[in-house]
Length: 81
Figure (cartoon, rainbow, N blue to C red):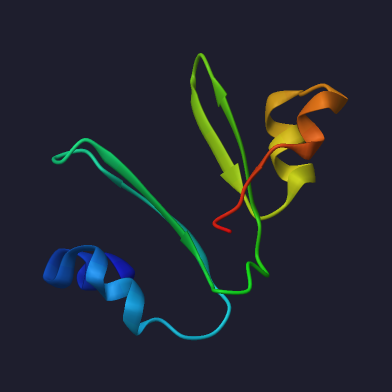
């Protein structure tokens, strides 16, 4: 649904979203990464960029588990505020 809306309206579709949400869209044609979350930022997005790619999750533990990160990573999250 999000991709369909993005294709139709571009980033303007975000204004129509309601409720709790968080997402990332990788638009390789435009060479952009679009990240958004609800106005209250209830759902965080934790990430790590590695040599193999990018790991993104709403759960810090998932990102840490996938990438064997050190404790200093734990305070790094994407926040739209």
